[in-house]
Image 1 (spheres, rainbow, N blue to C red):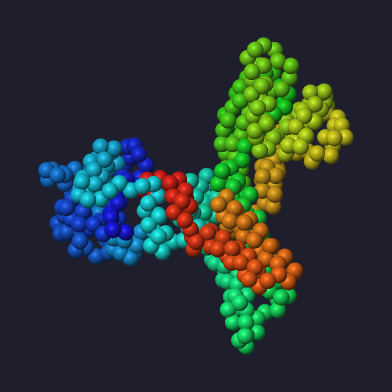
Image 2: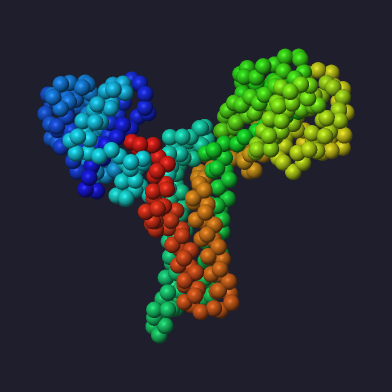
Length: 454
């Protein structure tokens, strides 16, 4: 890169410390011009050292007392000369220091440009670049572990292993095209079919982690519903571990939807406590019930609360049938009270969870069920080593499609050129995942989602 970039790498607003990052061939020269220290000029400092001093403005007045870190090429985040200025975190201070660096020849970095340079300069691959943002925005420890694994190259290594296996198959096929008269013993068609089948299986395994990856990154939405006064708000409070929803003995207390986020077994969950569903008694309750139905319609999962201390009502039965086809967890609440409920055949067969939101009994089992439903095959953070994102899943799907077509060509004894073409396309698509094959549009789409300064 011929130009140098600079940006504030810490969140906007006031804070104890802010970091201004400069990367590129002019980074050390700019540091020399703005930094005054008893240790001399930054361009003379050894790599990976931190020095105390002052940042001075255009008129040589002190802007701030700072610590400056020098990281020389290629041992830096971008592999370029890189300088980081640790200053006080006031907005005026950081803007003044950044503006001075820009006047001296740096340009303002685009979103994700530091990480983009790390990728373009070969320090990280595309999966690791994407993992940077996953680490930053991980909502739970489980999501963070998966993101850290991707940043460490776990996904890249698996993809590269598959690429090399496919490259070997492609080389065997192309050898027959390039040297048809040479004494080359290519793999038999059955051996090549076995190799392609194995590769497709490995790609399918990676693709199978996409749904879990989406849940860990984006979370799931759960609407808690039921007729009035069955304990919906108490259940939500018990799941959250705090008093978020108002709880009273008066039916119809909740007139509007109440939303809150929580970490359930490492899964980010957005709960919605809905108004009790019944024939509305007034305009306000009518609007609340309408919002309850809307929340249920757009949620990923519903939790249907039934009061075990009351007889089963027509409303309970209707609600159990109304959302048939949607993923619903059915819960018997108030098991701490005398039981009056007699289950019908449908509810008996619905794997009910019995709880008391007041005493907490059964709440852990309810959390287990939420995990089981959300992640069809529950895994601990250590079990789920990687989880592909939507871009990876799209590439995997397209590559699998091409390689399956190659198997068809192989089994139908089609021309060797056509077979090679199908394998080559599948190979190229796999390369998109790690950035071996990429376009400027693809890179722009990925890095524009980053924050400035990363």
